[in-house]
Image (cartoon, one colour):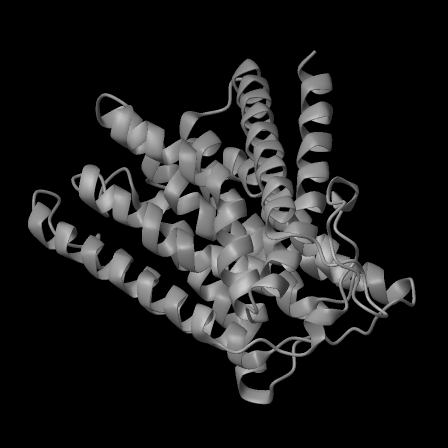
Amino acid sequence: MTFLLLVGAFAVILVGAELFTNAVEWFGRLFGLAEGAVGSVLAAVGTALPETMSPLVAIVFGAGAQSHGVGIGAILGAPFMLATLAMFVTGVAVLVRVRGGSGPAQLSVDPLILGHDLRVFGLSYGFAILVAFLPADLAPPRWLAAIVLIGAYAWYVRGHLRAEAGEDQADLAPLRFERLDRAGQDAPGASPVPRVRIVVVQLVVALAAIIGGAIAFVGAVESLARSVGLDETLLSLVIAPIATELPEKLNSVIWIRRGKDTLALGNITGAMVFQAAIPTSIALLFASGEWSIGNGSWVAFASAGVALVSTVLIFLPMVRTGRLYGRRLLIGGVLYLAQLLLVVASLSGLVAA
């Protein structure tokens, strides 16, 4: 029964991701938004909702340090998964594309857009982790840090929304819900241009499928993990985020297959910025005592260091040369396994947590 639920939830997420990528591209087209705004803001925030809900519920509505601890693990697990496993999956998609002869090994990305995302992520997340070194009972500096992070994200979003749209957005597949839009206008030589309301309807349906599917998938994963006796830390830090990051992974794979590499990578890097700022701010405001590096939390916070290292190793050559190759993204898989081994070693008592 659990296996059938996993398969069904995955199928729902997959359908939602297909509808979402199609709708968000049209939304950007209709409002004249640049690729950075579409991929790094709209798509990133939309698909980040499933993994944001889990720590929000655990921290704000949960009772006790254990609920807060689970929420902190989920918050730290999201950027870690995006910077490692999501990059690896995207790299594999590029290699499959190359082997199938449908695209090059070098990704056609905008280094300025991705470079901007990565700088904001590195500074925001690095700042949040530095705050964790403060004594656990110092709440006011953590509250101030949360305000800084929220302000930084607002500045980041404003910058993307003010960027000018490129000319390549005209090449869009027809809106999946176009049959519902009988009043849509036909553009000569292009797909029918849908009305905004139909695009919004498709976005809402897609997000409902993504969120509902993710909730069902996470529930099935947690049930399966607990049935075989997996530790709560391993579940919240490593296992559950695999499920909640599925929308970003699937969206990126879909965009890679379509040759829209900036949208594919921007969806991940934009989600990394969001996760480094908004969920982290929730932890700093409502679970400030648990946002602290010390006995019992070293391994969890080590995932943040792995995320930052993975980001540097993957994208530093792109910043220097302006080129990014799919095989470079595979580094994320290696670092994901390294962190997984550290967590297992901690649970086995081989290293101190």
